[in-house]
Amino acid sequence: MATAAPASAQVAEREIPDEYPVYEFVCPDGGYQSGCDASDIERAVDLEGVQAADFAQRCLYRTEAECSVIASGQVNRATDDPALHWQILGLQPSDGPYAEMLVLGEIGGPLPSTLLSQQVDGYFDPPVAARDGDGRFILHVPARNRGLGNADLMLFTSGDGWNWTSAEEIMRQIDRLLPQGFWTASPVGFNFREGSAFALVRRDSDAGCCATGGVVNVDFEQTDHSLNVSRVSFTRTQPVGEVHEAFPEDPSGMVEDDAG
Image (cartoon, rainbow, N blue to C red):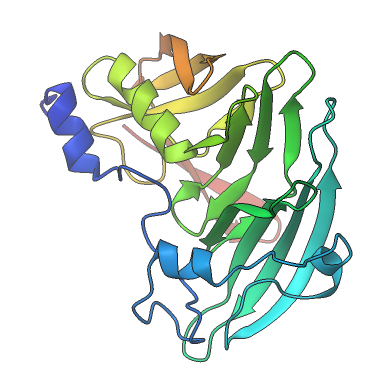
C-alpha cells in the first residue's frame, strides 16, 4: 500500500478545485472550450423579459452552437417566494463533443435572476426540492461528468440570498474527516431529504476500477449561509487478497481461474 500523506497533501494531490465547475465546454461562439470562462457563459444567459413558457420553448443560452431544450420545469416554493424555473439544454458545438447545460432562475420577482448556468459533458437530471417549509430550502441538481463521476449542484437559502455548493466540495469535506490513505469514491449517493449521503471509500493503493476501503455514511447541517458535512461514519473493510475471475470457454459453460 502506498504511504499515506498528510491530509493537506492529499487534497493537493487530487487537484480538487476550489469551485465547480473547473472548466467550460460549449462557448457562446459555438466552439468547444474555445477560450470562454464561467462568467462568459453566465453573461450569455439573459432572463430579461423571459416568460415561464420560454423555458420549454427556446434555448435561453445565446450560443452559435446547436442548442435544443431537452427538458424544463418549475419548482414551486412552500412560501410566497417566486417559483424557480429551469431548463436542461443539449449543446452540440461546431468542433467538439456533445454537452448539456442547466439554466435555472427566478423570473417572478422585481428583477429576473439567473441562479445557475452550468455545463457538464455527461448529463443533468431534473432539479429536486429536497428541503422546504421550515425556513430553509435546498434544491438538489443531480448531474454526472463523463469519467469524473458526481457533478451534482446544491442551491440553498435560509431566506437571505442564495448560496450553492457542489459534489466536489462535499467530497473534499468528507475526505478531510477520513483516516489518511482513504478517499471518497464517486459517485456519492445524496439524500438531502434526510440530510445524508452514502459512498464507497477508496484506498491509496486501489486500482482505478475498484474501491476496497469500505463505506462512509455522511450527515449534513444547513446554516444560514452554508451546507456542510457535520459527521461521517466510516466502516473500514479488509481485503482478503483473493481475486476470483471467470472466463467463457464455450457457450455451454465457464472455466474459473482463481488468482491469489
